[in-house]
Image (cartoon, rainbow, N blue to C red):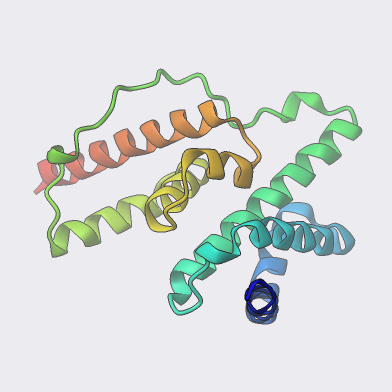
Length: 182
Protein backbone atom coordinates (compact mmCIF):
# COMPACT_ATOMS: atom_id res chain seq x y z
CA UNK A 1 0.00 0.00 0.00
CA UNK A 2 2.80 2.39 0.93
CA UNK A 3 4.53 1.65 -2.38
CA UNK A 4 1.38 2.69 -4.30
CA UNK A 5 1.20 5.96 -2.36
CA UNK A 6 4.84 6.67 -3.17
CA UNK A 7 4.26 5.96 -6.87
CA UNK A 8 1.24 8.27 -6.90
CA UNK A 9 3.23 10.99 -5.16
CA UNK A 10 6.02 10.63 -7.72
CA UNK A 11 3.52 10.88 -10.60
CA UNK A 12 1.90 13.91 -8.98
CA UNK A 13 5.29 15.57 -8.58
CA UNK A 14 6.11 14.91 -12.24
CA UNK A 15 2.77 16.42 -13.35
CA UNK A 16 3.38 19.49 -11.21
CA UNK A 17 6.88 19.87 -12.60
CA UNK A 18 5.72 19.61 -16.21
CA UNK A 19 2.87 22.03 -15.69
CA UNK A 20 4.59 24.71 -13.59
CA UNK A 21 8.32 24.53 -14.40
CA UNK A 22 8.17 27.47 -16.85
CA UNK A 23 6.27 29.68 -14.41
CA UNK A 24 8.68 28.78 -11.62
CA UNK A 25 11.64 29.41 -13.93
CA UNK A 26 10.32 32.87 -14.75
CA UNK A 27 9.78 33.66 -11.05
CA UNK A 28 13.24 32.48 -9.96
CA UNK A 29 15.08 34.05 -12.91
CA UNK A 30 13.53 37.44 -12.13
CA UNK A 31 15.34 37.27 -8.77
CA UNK A 32 18.56 35.43 -9.60
CA UNK A 33 19.28 36.60 -13.18
CA UNK A 34 21.32 33.45 -13.75
CA UNK A 35 20.14 30.38 -15.68
CA UNK A 36 22.10 27.76 -13.73
CA UNK A 37 21.07 29.15 -10.34
CA UNK A 38 17.48 29.40 -11.55
CA UNK A 39 17.52 25.69 -12.40
CA UNK A 40 18.97 24.98 -8.95
CA UNK A 41 16.22 27.06 -7.33
CA UNK A 42 13.54 25.05 -9.13
CA UNK A 43 15.16 21.79 -8.06
CA UNK A 44 15.41 22.95 -4.42
CA UNK A 45 11.79 24.11 -4.57
CA UNK A 46 10.64 20.68 -5.61
CA UNK A 47 12.59 19.12 -2.76
CA UNK A 48 10.54 21.33 -0.42
CA UNK A 49 7.34 20.47 -2.28
CA UNK A 50 8.01 16.73 -1.84
CA UNK A 51 7.82 17.21 1.92
CA UNK A 52 4.30 18.65 1.55
CA UNK A 53 3.08 16.83 -1.56
CA UNK A 54 -0.02 15.56 0.25
CA UNK A 55 -1.17 19.17 0.76
CA UNK A 56 -0.98 20.06 -2.94
CA UNK A 57 -4.40 19.98 -4.56
CA UNK A 58 -3.92 19.61 -8.32
CA UNK A 59 -7.59 20.28 -8.98
CA UNK A 60 -7.45 23.80 -7.55
CA UNK A 61 -5.06 25.29 -10.12
CA UNK A 62 -4.89 28.87 -8.78
CA UNK A 63 -4.17 27.58 -5.29
CA UNK A 64 -1.53 25.16 -6.56
CA UNK A 65 0.05 27.81 -8.78
CA UNK A 66 0.22 30.23 -5.83
CA UNK A 67 1.77 27.61 -3.59
CA UNK A 68 4.49 26.64 -6.05
CA UNK A 69 5.33 30.25 -6.87
CA UNK A 70 5.65 31.15 -3.18
CA UNK A 71 8.02 28.26 -2.55
CA UNK A 72 10.08 28.99 -5.66
CA UNK A 73 10.27 32.73 -4.97
CA UNK A 74 11.44 32.17 -1.41
CA UNK A 75 13.98 29.58 -2.48
CA UNK A 76 15.37 32.03 -5.05
CA UNK A 77 15.47 34.82 -2.46
CA UNK A 78 17.40 32.56 -0.07
CA UNK A 79 19.85 31.72 -2.85
CA UNK A 80 20.21 35.40 -3.71
CA UNK A 81 20.89 36.24 -0.06
CA UNK A 82 23.49 33.47 0.01
CA UNK A 83 25.14 34.96 -3.04
CA UNK A 84 25.22 38.40 -1.37
CA UNK A 85 26.70 36.85 1.76
CA UNK A 86 29.43 35.10 -0.20
CA UNK A 87 30.17 38.35 -2.03
CA UNK A 88 30.54 40.14 1.33
CA UNK A 89 27.52 42.39 0.72
CA UNK A 90 26.00 41.73 4.13
CA UNK A 91 24.38 45.18 4.33
CA UNK A 92 21.66 44.09 1.88
CA UNK A 93 20.87 40.75 3.54
CA UNK A 94 18.21 41.99 5.95
CA UNK A 95 15.86 43.60 3.45
CA UNK A 96 12.80 42.55 5.44
CA UNK A 97 13.45 44.88 8.41
CA UNK A 98 11.26 43.40 11.12
CA UNK A 99 11.23 46.53 13.30
CA UNK A 100 7.47 47.20 13.29
CA UNK A 101 5.69 46.64 16.60
CA UNK A 102 3.75 43.41 16.89
CA UNK A 103 0.00 43.89 17.27
CA UNK A 104 -2.30 41.83 19.41
CA UNK A 105 -4.61 39.21 17.97
CA UNK A 106 -7.30 40.47 15.57
CA UNK A 107 -10.73 39.19 16.57
CA UNK A 108 -12.40 37.18 13.78
CA UNK A 109 -15.71 38.82 14.67
CA UNK A 110 -14.29 42.13 13.46
CA UNK A 111 -14.72 40.96 9.86
CA UNK A 112 -18.10 39.79 8.61
CA UNK A 113 -17.76 37.55 5.59
CA UNK A 114 -20.06 37.99 2.60
CA UNK A 115 -19.59 37.66 -1.15
CA UNK A 116 -18.48 41.25 -1.63
CA UNK A 117 -16.33 41.04 1.50
CA UNK A 118 -14.53 38.01 0.08
CA UNK A 119 -13.75 39.97 -3.08
CA UNK A 120 -12.47 42.89 -0.97
CA UNK A 121 -10.33 40.55 1.17
CA UNK A 122 -8.90 38.88 -1.93
CA UNK A 123 -7.99 42.27 -3.37
CA UNK A 124 -6.46 43.40 -0.07
CA UNK A 125 -4.38 40.20 0.20
CA UNK A 126 -3.09 40.79 -3.33
CA UNK A 127 -1.92 44.26 -2.29
CA UNK A 128 0.03 43.07 0.77
CA UNK A 129 3.84 43.06 0.56
CA UNK A 130 5.05 39.60 -0.52
CA UNK A 131 6.47 38.57 2.84
CA UNK A 132 3.05 39.03 4.47
CA UNK A 133 0.98 37.80 1.53
CA UNK A 134 2.95 34.54 1.38
CA UNK A 135 2.34 33.78 5.06
CA UNK A 136 -1.39 34.54 4.81
CA UNK A 137 -1.80 32.41 1.68
CA UNK A 138 0.15 29.47 3.10
CA UNK A 139 -1.71 29.70 6.39
CA UNK A 140 -5.26 30.38 5.22
CA UNK A 141 -5.45 28.97 1.73
CA UNK A 142 -3.06 26.03 2.01
CA UNK A 143 -3.75 25.21 5.68
CA UNK A 144 -0.11 25.02 6.73
CA UNK A 145 0.82 25.44 10.36
CA UNK A 146 3.17 28.23 11.38
CA UNK A 147 5.89 25.62 11.92
CA UNK A 148 5.44 24.30 8.37
CA UNK A 149 5.46 27.82 6.96
CA UNK A 150 8.69 28.58 8.82
CA UNK A 151 10.33 25.57 7.14
CA UNK A 152 8.92 26.41 3.70
CA UNK A 153 10.03 30.06 3.86
CA UNK A 154 13.26 29.25 5.70
CA UNK A 155 12.55 31.71 8.51
CA UNK A 156 11.97 31.29 12.23
CA UNK A 157 8.64 30.38 13.80
CA UNK A 158 8.61 33.78 15.55
CA UNK A 159 9.04 35.57 12.20
CA UNK A 160 6.07 33.68 10.76
CA UNK A 161 4.02 34.51 13.83
CA UNK A 162 4.87 38.23 13.55
CA UNK A 163 4.19 38.31 9.82
CA UNK A 164 0.86 36.59 10.30
CA UNK A 165 -0.23 39.09 12.93
CA UNK A 166 0.98 42.04 10.89
CA UNK A 167 -0.70 40.76 7.73
CA UNK A 168 -4.01 40.38 9.52
CA UNK A 169 -3.66 43.88 10.96
CA UNK A 170 -2.85 45.30 7.51
CA UNK A 171 -5.84 43.49 6.01
CA UNK A 172 -8.15 44.81 8.68
CA UNK A 173 -6.83 48.34 8.24
CA UNK A 174 -7.19 48.14 4.44
CA UNK A 175 -10.77 46.89 4.75
CA UNK A 176 -11.64 49.56 7.30
CA UNK A 177 -10.06 52.27 5.14
CA UNK A 178 -12.04 51.07 2.13
CA UNK A 179 -15.23 51.01 4.21
CA UNK A 180 -14.60 54.56 5.43
CA UNK A 181 -14.08 55.72 1.85
CA UNK A 182 -17.60 54.55 0.89
